[in-house]
Amino acid sequence: MIGAGMGAMAAAARLAVAGHRVVVYERTDTYGGAVRRFERDGFGFDTGPGLLTLPAVYRDLFVKTGKEPLEDCVELVQVDPSSRHLFPDGTEAALPNASRAGVVAALDEALGGGAGERWGDFLVRAREAWDRTRRPLLEEPLWPNWHVLADKEPYPAVPHKRLLRTRRASTLSEIGAWELRDERLAALLTSSALAHGLDPRTAPASAAVLPYMEHAFGTWYVRGGIRELARAVYERCVRRRVEFVFGAEVLSILDKEGRATGVELMDGTVAEADHVVADVDPARLMEMTDPPLDGRGDVRADPFRTGPGRFVVLLALRGARETGAAHRTVVHAPDPESELDFLDSAKGDEPPPPTVTVLRPDDPALRPDDGHESVVLSAVVPSTLDWEEEGVLRLYTEHLLEAAEAAIPGLRDRVLWQEVRTPDDTDDETSAFLGAVPAPSLAAGQGRFLHPSNTTRLPGLYRVGGWSHPGGGLPHAGMSGALVAGLIVEGPGFRGSQ
Image 1 (cartoon, rainbow, N blue to C red):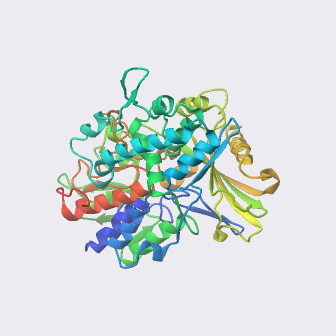
Image 2: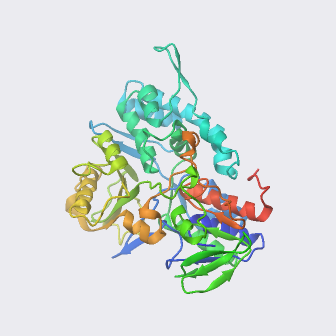
Image 3: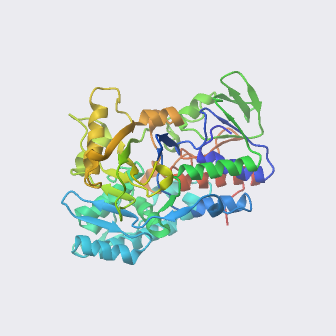
């Protein structure tokens, strides 16, 4: 197995339980892929995902690989409110966790004008899209006739009386303009897309399933940080006798008579295998196979399409976290169109202020004492930016700090020190091309939002993790591990969990 990301480890544990000897070769010195932790002076920070949706994916993994349930290995806490939103016009809204009625009431009170009802109606339609796509997109291997998923929009058409006809939204932005009819509700939708590295102007309407997932299954935090989830999965693998070799970079995938037969490491070591599972992005996978596995012609496996990355500022603060502070606050961009234009082209005089997510976990494990606080600020940024160019790093840092001041009282006076992380750091840690972060797979959009299938054109070689079906995100990585394990154990006839 190449890489010790969350998808690879989820597959490794399942395969080990099924009787396979599994060896994981990881280029870096630790496990977890992008799920990492930075520690200094008693402060701890998640540098990758900070929250978890669909914990059932990892509950299933732990049930299927041993007697200890997930909750015996990590402490899961529902985050409430799920998120607090600060809008450019000065209004704000705190959204309850996993409660449609509560969200409707909160939005009506905060925004008025029937905003809550419109958002509630949107969630009903998003559920319909979810019901139509959940199994083929998340629980089954990618269909050979994947064009069926690519060509049909699962988000339901909405009749507009003014037009006297049915008008179907084809993008998230059109949902915001035609159905939500409020710039602040549209900003809620935009922030949900941006969190996954998607531009709402081009993301298909089927991306409505992303805010629906969070609403329906809740937002969860792992006590001690999300890194604790990676630790628990790694320890489950070790208990099932999965072998890990760290500091071992794979140079190439060996093949004999048209079948993958093992890997060659950078130091010349050759390891034979019956199956090879790669948790790497398509660009790196191309370098490992001869001839290259994928080409530009396959829209679902085009390594030259680079999505955005994440810019992160870690803050060590003096002073206690105030009572009742929200775990997650989203500070919406003052000019969303400029933000999206820059994200798309990375061109312009200077980067405009982005949408900023502020994470403030109330977790003693992440601070030296109750008189301090650890905070993570993040924004989605073009992965093609030159972070060594004078002023770019400084300007983005200032943008994030300025936005965070709206969420954290007296922020500037509380900063002890800060650590900045760019997509270049993501590239170094995960080998993701330019530090891009993969989005979840989505239906519609002519297949541009589907990821490569878990099987490949080289028999015996499988893809796993965020750069393969069903795409990026912690839940999706866990699902990809289940799919790959099923394909190896049951063969090409595997059709997913029942």
